[in-house]
Image (cartoon, rainbow, N blue to C red):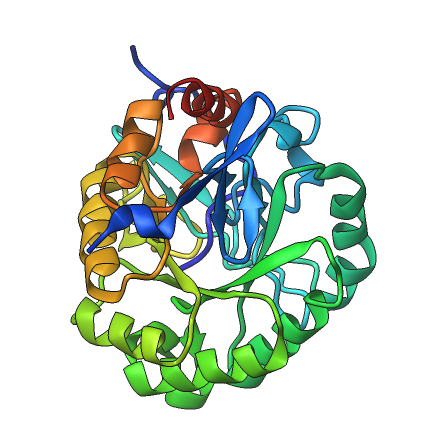
Amino acid sequence: MASSATSSSTSGRFSETTSDPQAARTAVNHPGRPGIAVFGTTFQNPVLLSAGTAGFGREVAGVIALTELGGIVTKAVSPEPRAGHPAPRVAEFPGGMLNAVGLANPGLEYVVERELPWLERHAGPAKVIVNVVGSRVDDFVTVARKVSEHAVVAAVELNVSCPNTERGGLEFGADAGVLSDLVRRCRGATDRPVIVKLAPNLTDLGVVVDAVAEAGAAGFTLFNTMPGTLSSENGGGGSRLGFGRGGVSGPGLLPVGVLATATVTARTGLPVIGVGGIRSYRDACQYLDAGASLVAVGTAALANPRIPARIARDWSRHG
């Protein structure tokens, strides 16, 4: 499915209202603030901005305090620029949001020349994870190798919910064999940890995560958006989205992601970034209590940009 939107007309209706999981997140003491050692580095707190919701950081720097967060997962990066899907790309509904951005991005060359240098200057202590997409395995390998030349990149996140043109449009993440090959080849192309972002509608999550773990992935992001569509509010049929269908995000995904986090951490022992439905510190704790090492905030940050930093501050006080 498409990554989440980088901008939205969200009115704020989603804003905040009043195995051994500890092995995956080791507390590291810093003056006045704890930290988390995972994926070969130390995050000052577990709160990330999820892929697609904050561009490459530059787009939200005047609104969201990047330096207060544990990190940012960038917008998807493909070898070539992508225009994405036609408008409208975002549609709200009670309890959530639909998006069909279509992985729009300026392409690898632009990101390497413009966006990663900007992050090197402005991310501060926040760690940078680059979300990687492609239409074939070689695309992922190319992007993972090139972005890893920048020291600011702490890890790469493979978005395997996109279609594999070499396999007739089947999603990478739906085929354990293809996914194993993808992970192994990306591991050979970068010295950064390789994180795999899965979709919530896999027919056999256990088989897939076992294959990913055996291939040497450093961990998982659970989950991407869930497929969905809604008809136009104006009547007459048709979809609210220009592409016709898109990804569902928002509060309703919280229990889905929490269950997956508990299942995958117990099954593989690998670190998990929990994402989906997080609006508050209490929501974040649902993932952390289930074994997640980190959490990522998306839709809620579009509704209220102060939420991620608020969760990070609450975690520093209580975590």
